[in-house]
Amino acid sequence: MNTETSHTDATKPSIVKPYALGHGTLECRNLNESRRFYEEFLGLECVRHAMPAMAIRFGHNKFHIFCVEVGDDLHPTNLLNHWGIDVSSREEVDAAHDAAKSQQSDYGIRQVTDVVLQHGVYSFYIEDLDHNWWEIQHYDGFQHDDVFDFGDRF
Image (cartoon, rainbow, N blue to C red; front, side, top):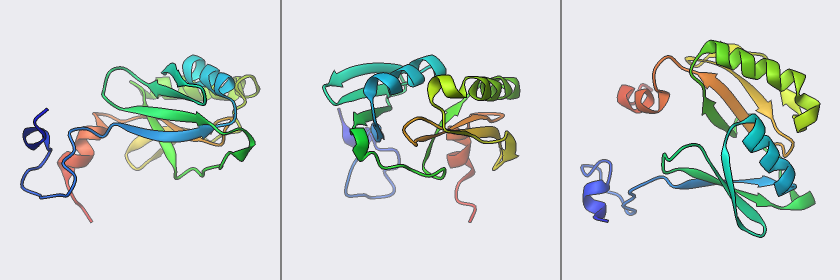
């Protein structure tokens, strides 16, 4: 791959010449229990690519999360360190919120926040069984593009 033509902004020199933001990493206590939550509740695709780890993704957008099983050495995160999942409407946010509340014990969900309209999105947060946080949100548009199209505002 020609990294020069795939670099997002050739006018800003950088040491690393990326062609994709490829992955992130999170921890889990038990891969099988966490996989059930990711697939059945969050609707994500999982593949076990190593004994202590699996990859998680949605669609083919060239980004995935590695989930590494660490057992009792788990490091809890806080709400500010969360993963965002976009849904198509406010009604889908409300339905996901209702499901999170009604199936909280079934999936080991630790916390479900109230649904709010904040920072331009209609959303709520879930703390999963491994202390990872997920924001289920609806944004009128495509936030990924808009955030960068709007540019620096502060």
